[in-house]
Length: 472
Image (cartoon, rainbow, N blue to C red):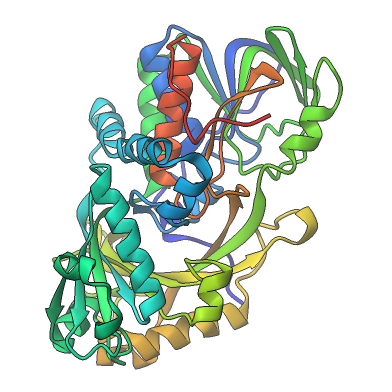
């Protein structure tokens, strides 16, 4: 079975110096977890406060879920907005969506301030829909978006869809009737199972390379008050009034505040001044799922794409409106150093980096049983690859894909909060502890927004209540 190795990790600087903690340390803010949530939190704290920031990771920078994801930038929850509105209220849900949607501008801010030149692509994505139940749910969500001034989707429905007469009349102006060929061409679909689709704003970025590049910028610009320590696991956190002590094996980090930007599955004990109540709560904040992806190369394509495919029946939709699971596909330019291994034609070594398009396909997930420790070195399961390959050969239009040569196989641990909404803010039982965690399957924009919100909280800004606030 192939090893767990993602194309995003492949593009990182293999010669970058790793700094480990070698003594006791005192700082203003300690951030645990150097993925996109931790890096974004560090960026906005450094830019908008005068605090001394220490970023810590048990492994290496961006080598967790951030380096083993789809790199898909999108404003979305893996949950119906109308269901969230029933829990949080319509206005609070709409405001939460707007805040997360502001992550696009925050991502641009980080990219420009850090003077990055790595690939960051924006384009339209498409969701493929095969049944009426899911289509109706999307229309209802779209109605909610329109009511509160959120960005709406464009819908396209086949003239041959069997459920046309079932669609409520009030939605008639929300979709356009089109030929099957129109849908199949955009979806690059060859089995004609999809009767509808919608478009949405999306993009792609190598979030691991993004984190590495931003950290390099921060280390130079804020050399007097920013540090990164890798291969530095935190075993224990002791919370006092206005202070936190972090046990990093033989060394101790003393900090005024600590921000947990992990996926929630580290073996960290949290001792509060009033007992272990936070420790018990913390280890139930998220449930673990392992997400699997594979990637293969195509000749360089001009257009980047992102699509997901929903073809579940009514029973699956009742369990979870987003299915279990759905498949998603992205295609984007990809730079790989010269190698005859990855191209059919002969390549002369020493040429500049070669551009390909990489197609990434994911969707299969497995639940982490009973908080079992995730093994990041676990080989890629053969049955999962068969599932992905079956989908590729059944669905994608390109006839040449009958014998796909996959180049990358990777999996990553995702932390899902019980309500699939990210946790951002102070621990109610002790404000010395803050959270920016819970990828919930779609983590880039919520992580970045979470970093900005944490900086606002620590800067003393008065913020309105939000759906992201940790509860007692």
